[in-house]
Image 1 (spheres, rainbow, N blue to C red):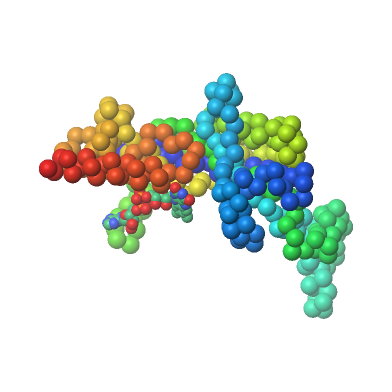
Image 2: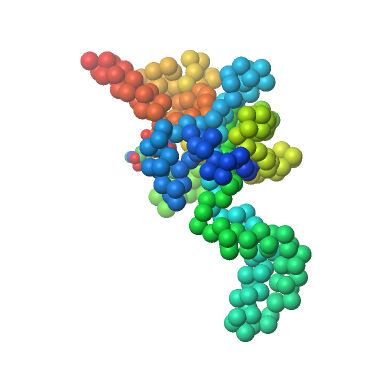
Amino acid sequence: VGRFFMEHLNLVAGCFVPSTRDGAALDLYEVPSRRIGASRLLSKHGRADLRISERLQRERRLLNASATFARLWTHPSHASEGYLAMKQLFEGWSEGRSDGLWEHLQKAVRDVDNVAAALYWKLFDREKPLPLMDFRVQVEQEPNPLSRVRLGAERDRFGMPRVELDWRLTDNDLRTLRETARIIAVECGATGAGRLQILLPADDGALSAMVGGAWHHMGTTRMHPDPRQGVVDANCRVHGTANLFIAGSSVFPAVGHAHPTLTIAALAMRLADHVKGVLS
Ligand SMILES: Cc1cc2nc3c(=O)[nH]c(=O)nc-3n(C[C@H](O)[C@H](O)[C@H](O)COP(=O)(O)OP(=O)(O)OC[C@H]3O[C@@H](n4cnc5c(N)ncnc54)[C@H](O)[C@@H]3O)c2cc1C
């Protein structure tokens, strides 16, 4: 119990510049933002995730993964050191403060490219979607007994031990993330959809630190016919017990890349039928 904790690796892996300003070629794979409104995109044709072909996936021995695009409304330069320093410079100046002004000015001058880009977007393209999109990838995590949840020594206010999570990624998880992004980037260029700049650090440690999850907690009571290798049997019954069953994504022996809840619901309905059969 508690081993094989899996999540979906989820992160912005790059920046996409569509070849047309409205990015229509990839509409189907665009996650609607609040500002565009779900209706504009979903009323047309629903929404899909982008995947690499099964043939290529097998050939490269990759795990499952999918990708989506999300329109950016704030130019990345608005978060740059130079632009933030310039804002502080003007704020300080307008409030008659002199502390730190010289330092802010130096930072703004050193980062003049970003200051210019930020001002341009603010003055001329405000309130329009930028011709830039976040490229987000969601990757399957492979089963790994060392990735686990344990009970910690610390207790919560009800006196129950708090959980400790030791989430571990494998080389294969990170390789799938990098390769999937690279293959989709090459295809975006080859098909003329646009240019995808991958923004992943070369170092695996740094990449692991960047990876987030998707609130999909899975695998810690995995299904396996052998009690030494899993917690529940094929009917979700806990090995070694007569009438204890588990419904939830913790029984998944492997997790794919897709969101888990439809599979959880399907398994729960199957379990309900099974328990009904046992009781009658
Ligand atoms: C922000 C967020 C977004 C998500 N988005 C998606 C998505 O888009 N698609 C998707 O497929 N999945 C999504 N998920 C995951 C999805 O919510 C879960 O996979 C799903 O809810 C799990 O269902 P469950 O019935 O196993 O557990 P839960 O939905 O967590 O249900 C467990 C229930 O047990 C109750 N409970 C706990 N302890 C006790 C106790 N001691 N006594 C009595 N009751 C107890 C809880 O109150 C809860 O009602 C998301 C999760 C989060 C947090």
